[in-house]
Amino acid sequence: MNRVSIAAVAAAFVIAIVAGSSLFTVEQTEQVLITQFGQPIRVISEAGLHTKLPLVQTVISFDRRLLDYELPSEEVILGDQRRLIVDSFTRFRITDPLRYYQAVGPTEGGVRARLNSVVSSALRRVLGNEQLLNVLSTNRDRIMALIKGQVNTEMKNFGVTIEDVRIRRADLPEENTQAILSRMQSERERVARQARAEGAEASSRIRAGADRERTVLLAEARATADKLRGEGEGQAIALFANAFQRDPKFFETWRTLQAYRDAFANGASRLVLTPSSDFLKLLQQEPTVGGTPTAPP
Picture 1 (cartoon, rainbow, N blue to C red):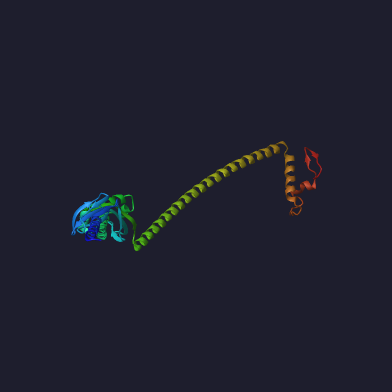
Picture 2 (picture 1 turned 90 degrees about the vertical axis):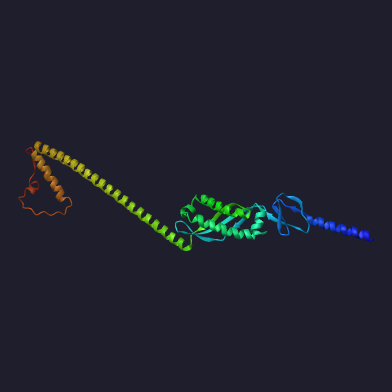
């Protein structure tokens, strides 16, 4: 091989190396910053094949997708002096690669450290003016919007746009949790005692009403019974009086026979009487009804 061929091959090899180092590809998920000797030259956001000066310019890629950053748990003092353990996360996007590179450098580690400080400060400022009930209720969306706005304002200088800031979990410290549980238990016991007292009062009132109605009903029943008994006794007395008036001798004999039946029904009765007692006269002589003797009983 002559010198001309060798030179041509070498030239072609050098041209290939130079061409290869001057071409680069930008992906759909990337945005590129071109630097020359460490100084930013231009930003490329369009995907495709691009060129740069070989061996002089450097390509620095930045992710253009939505990025997440989870903050470590921290204790925050609320506006009502309650302490709260807060876990939060932030979603951000690199929108200005040049400003981002000038502020934190070519890696994501720098902006994450800065986010930790900015989000933590915003959480403490906003939550420091809020009550516990607001944080645990639907007002949380308003609170998170305030935090997001403050963080976004500070992070614009770093070429970053904050898409969302959220509290993932908010817990009370262990000692506060136990105190709140004790208060909740005391409150439930108080409500239970009040309910039992109201139930006992209602029960006593119902029993008193029932006893009063029972007493009234019994009194009315007794009065009705006494009235009916008196009417019956009056009718019986009237019947006896009518019978006595129609035939006093028969009535006297009939009453005496009834007395014998009641006295001697069981066969074991003992009576201490004189022989001349009127009670025994029907046993000693035949009764007469209308002047006619009757057979002895």
